[in-house]
Length: 64
Image 1 (cartoon, rainbow, N blue to C red):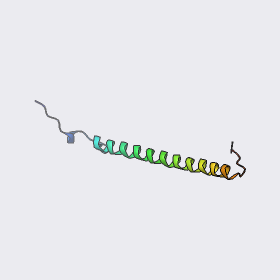
Image 2 (image 1 turned 90 degrees about the vertical axis):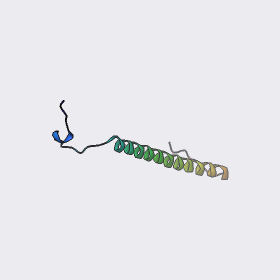
Image 3 (image 1 turned 90 degrees about the horizontal axis):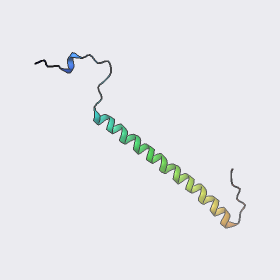
Image 4 (image 1 turned 45 degrees about the horizontal axis):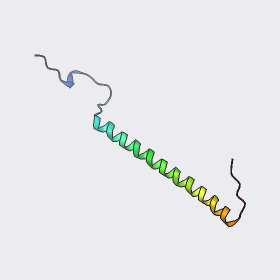
């Protein structure tokens, strides 16, 4: 019976294990979620400021 060991196979690149990939996926997902929340908060604050101006009776010009 032939047995093969990892030392027999030269590797030029580092070895990555599934746990490392999983950690990266969690980090990327978390980063994307945080960025999305930040954008939503910023857009909400901008829209709220326009509504406040309109309620006060000031002229509100839509930026498009």
